[in-house]
Length: 485
Image (cartoon, rainbow, N blue to C red; front, side, top):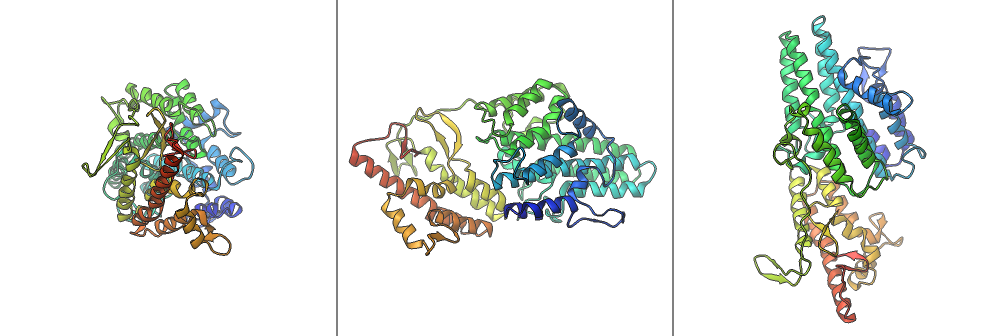
């Protein structure tokens, strides 16, 4: 959490120091270690046990592909972190938010993941000879999996997201419709149930049962890694965090098919901007799931998009008819053209309000910033890969609304002497206010979005329609001033 906060503040030197030296985790059992840092965890320096299948597989993959000087998952994670907090390196052009996100994904998908597996497999290894050591290692493995931010309740903390592997599935479960009550992921419940079985086996000195539980848990962990990759593949931009999700699953795919692994990594590479990214990545994973070796992972756990047991390829896009009249509110008003895509923004507001009711601020903020239900269509009525977001209504306003009298009235009245509002450019006043409400999980955030962001967008559309009518020029591509309506 401290690293996340420091990166948001662009205090990269402090974030790096916490990563290298540690801050909260003190190993009382090993006085020569003292504070345990995330850097030490990437080097397997806490336990020093690397004789488990996943570590060996990933090391072979990194060695075969010539990735990093020291070919192992810890070295890769370390270099990603250093690049994300450095002005140079592979992410030199990345924004602050992109740097923060790639660090979060790396810590969850690599550092937490391998530290948890290391401890759990070590516990299994020590079970026949030293039950006390095995028990401490097993509990430590679960701690590395979940972390402390999730709290003590089953399903984790609903008020904020954790930073370890447990949160990887929570971040993707809404996309795949696999969330259970409280915002937790179904696969997390399956993993924890498996770990409890192993814990009970350890208590009764059933070492074969411990080994079986750890192996089952390790198999289930592939699901969040796949979910994470597929959710990022649906992002129109290729960002650093998406690249890391591809590297987190690539060794598993490589063990099955080298070409498929290369395809996934290539499509997800930072700034590659592949136009076929989503279909190519989904196709690769679909091929993987069709293999008999992966039948143990039920496809309906990985994605509700499955069809016939293994097919997760996205459906063919359904076009709209831009000139088709659209009835609203059961015929209360009938629009002369298709507006179902735009009116769907109301579903975003509802989803955000639902998320805030359970204190899932992170998911509510994501929907506000990225959009979820209001798809954008091109001039031919074909869906693009983008969605409208409520935040964009505000952030784009300074570019597209400057000629609107209503908008100018607001920014003139709200601006301080520095032409700012709440410490940010006054043109972004709506986003500044709503973001503050979201940060505090305010129950009125949804109302504010309707009354400020969406209302001004409606006002802008009316002004644009009036101007177009005066000029007798109706946009042929469903846009005004270069902006999709």
